[in-house]
Image (cartoon, rainbow, N blue to C red; front, side, top):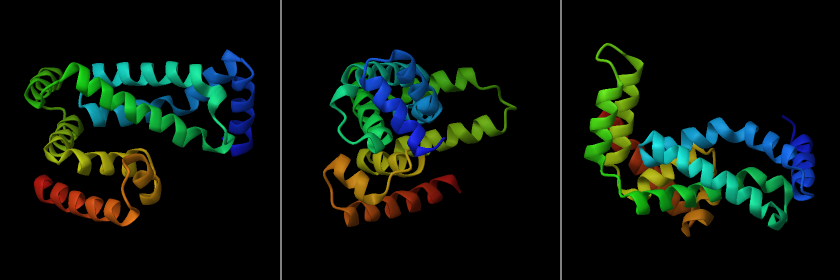
Amino acid sequence: MSSDFIENLVVQAQNGDADAFGELYSVYAKDMYRFALYYTGSRFLAEDAVSDAALFAFEKIGQLKKKSAFKPWLFKILFNCCKKQQREKALSLQRAELFLAEEIPENSGGQLEALTVKTALAALEKEEREVVLLSFIGGYSSGEIGQMLSMKGGSVRSKKSRAVAKLREMMR
């Protein structure tokens, strides 16, 4: 979708058009869910975070000043909702692994690979995991991630590099 189309939907949503916001949401819903799922490690927490983020964004869209910044604004809200979900629910890695193990059949190939990636991501330090997810799933630059996490861009690049090296080592 073109940026002009998205900006037009943002303007309509800011003027109270719920259908326009619904259309905006549908453009980003899959990416939001994927981000939240990898961040939280739980489909239930991910669904809650996405739902909370969408509701909050709908309520606050009038405060968005730069129409072209809708996606980063939306993902920053989602990022904060994911953090809130983890704090509130305090879902442990062990419980998440048990749940996933019950959900995935033994001969499911790609799904087991996804489980391995989730386990490897969960083994990273919190900031490393956040940087990796915001970079690879959210598609943000080091500068944008630095703004979200209150870090310098160089620090983000260093953390990302170390995290990717750790992931490679764990995935061998």
